[in-house]
Amino acid sequence: MKSRQLRVILILSGHMKRLLSVLILVLFGLAVFIPQETISTFLYWSMFLGILILLVVYWFVSYWVSLEKAAEVIAGPIRFSLFCAKVPPATSEDLVRGRLVIAGNQISLIQRKKDKGKPVSFVSVWDYPIDRITAISFAKVVGWRNGFVLELDKNDQASFVSIQARRLKPVMIEALGWNTEE
Image (cartoon, rainbow, N blue to C red):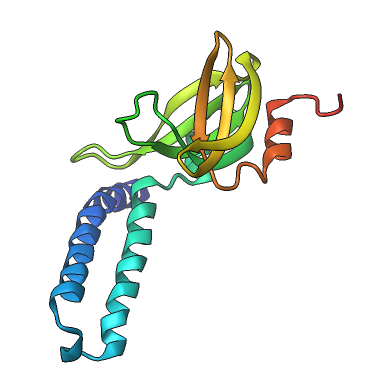
């Protein structure tokens, strides 16, 4: 019975995005087209706060991958986890948002997937063996966005956007199994 209830909840979360989109659009339309003088100032500015709250909820419903869901996809214990976005090779593509995890001898990016008519699932969209990573550097990776760059073998690299990556540098290096005492 619990698995059926969970399936229903996961299917409804797909409809949640649609509902949130409509609510954001309606609130925005009301805030723009209703003259401020016709409603109270508190209600007028509350609409903007409502839009902001709905945008945050929409982001969570669309992109958030919890540590528990990532652990279900990855085999073995997770040594490091960070929500970030991978910069795609083509500049015309959107960032690939998900949870970067280091477990075993792999580094993986787990992403939330929602196919029409199916429940939400979580899949690994990028995997790479740790022993083939040669270096890590922290810098601005896309425009003004901070992040880190993994130098891969064969002169390749993978860039990730993350606000907190630089702060977590020692933990990340330890999770990669690199010796910091040189």
